[in-house]
Length: 218
Image (cartoon, rainbow, N blue to C red):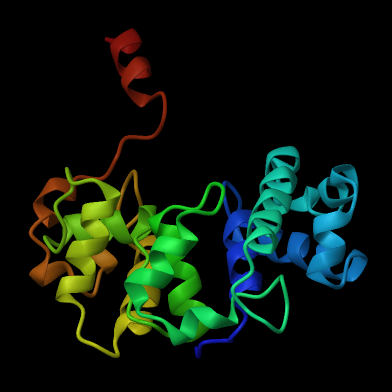
């Protein structure tokens, strides 16, 4: 995976990814681009049209309003002479400045800003979502009780320069495929020997309703 160089696309993809899976996010994004091919069209379209286009991504009423608010905020204070709707300048300034700018946009927090900087330009940021936070906490890399802002700083501090994208993707995949939230597959985990949390998940969970059935039978 390489940086794709389109920060606005990454920004809106991250908005669309909230509370849904990758497939639904991608379907919603492609429908939006097919119906409204340029960002200016997305910004100026009736919000109902944007909402209908992204409906497969879920909570489309909220996301459509958020997308348009973000685009308008970018256009109101353009920093690229070539276009009012451009974030290409982000790659030319220090990461801290780019991050702080992105976090002034409506609804954009540290994770979304990190996604834009890492996936669009390969800059030194590591997004910490629920999967990365969970896996990092169980492995002892992150403080599970820390805020997401602090966890981002912790993850960035322990990541070797140039390895940000690979580490994020690997932790994300591990969280989705193996280190599940409710019951991690520790017996199948390649990191089990070095994981300090393995002992917390050694017993197989009971099937739903088995406890109640056992009590009733007794």
